[in-house]
Amino acid sequence: MHREAITGEPVRRPTWARRVAGWLPYLLAAAPPAFLIAIVLTQTVDVPFADQWALIPLLQHSYKHTLTFQDFWQQHNEHRLLFPRLAMLGLARLSGWNTRVEMLASVALAGALFAVLVAQVRQTGRLLGMRWQWLVPAISLAVFSLNQAESWWGGWNLQIFLSVLAVVACMALLTQASARIGTLGLAVACAVVASYSYGPGLLVWGAGAALLILRARPWSAAIGWRLALWCAAGVLTLAAFFYGYHWSAQTAPLASIVRAPGRYLVYTTMYLGAAPTRGAVEYLFGAITGDTYAICNLGDSDLCAMVGTAALAAGAGGVLLFAFGTWALLRRVALQTLLPYIGLGLYALASGLMTGLSRAAYGNNQALAQRYATNASLFWIALVILAALCAHAYGPHRWLGAAAKGLILAFGVSIALSTIQGLDHFRWQHSFLDPAREALLVGDDDALLQRLYPDPKIVRAGRAFLQQRHLSVFRRTS
View 1 (tube, rainbow, N blue to C red):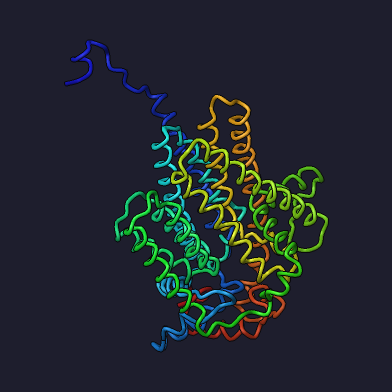
View 2: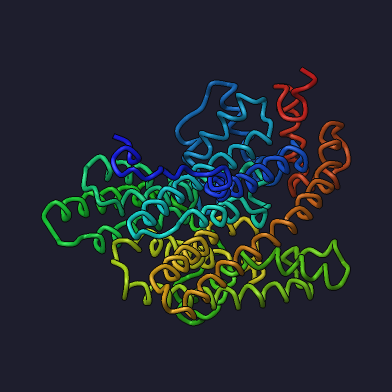
């Protein structure tokens, strides 16, 4: 029976305004991906760029029907790109190698990542009885931000989005209350995809083992078997990854790390802090000086020094706030509830350390590269969620709740400014690559072809194949 029939009281139906207010967080969350898709379709150049030229041999073998497993398995820098190569080859064959299709595939992977994060936050919010909906726009802004412009305009970097998605999905599965073997199997599959998509994905095995141990309350034989199966899968995956592995010259030897650990800690701190600060500092610098074309291009300019200082401060402050927030929440919230976010934050921190071991030799400014923001943003998303949990758990303590809300607001403003500034990065890249695309069509001007890849001989050889198969810039002439 209806409530009105039972109690005689009129049923309060939601008004139009309340319905709109209920949907407002989701409407706001739809804006960043819609804006990003519009930018990809209008402000990018459909031409192979940088590492994408490494896909040419794979395409050649596919047309000759001589593909082997080794073509997908072979090492690329520090990575084994088994699953990204499969995806990129399939997209190239289906689209005539329209590189915008690869970019949109990255957006789709980011959409799946966003969905997994929102599902996790929704579960936590309902468990604790907190209003979680307004975290959705903040997560969307971080996931689809133009602060990672380099990842969006390069189809090759879908490897990063695939790995990050697999890591987040894996952690979400491992922290579920369900102890079903199928859940563990899905988590193992996600970990394998993460490992063979991008180097830092290997860290998921250690993180996963820690989550399984911390999740165990109380300990049982079934949990022990799950942990044993997880570790066995991890050992096999790592053994296969490093079989025949060639260490790059940039990888730091153990002696170097022991002698100068601070060098790698500084790099890692800047790696974390650059995600929310690089674009914001560039934007403010342009607004204050009037130099709206100012971009830190990882050089030794005064702007890069400012960006680096801001990134270092933000990274150090973020780590301290993450530690404090976790400590404060453990006094009010069960550890198992916090594990997904603690895991994400520590994974991002570990990925910074891992990247530093192979890239710190290039200097600290290299830590500001936009492609690293995709991994580093996981740390800030986790921190924002922990801040929201603090605001809920310590509601009566106004200063802590206000500080948590202030952190969320500051993060949102910084990411928004980075997104606005990201437009300039897209415009600069467009103006840089558009003449090179025309040069590729004609086949002259090595200086312009070098914009596509440092060695114009490789570009010319690839051009001949693309023209023969009517791919990329030549597909419209088929």
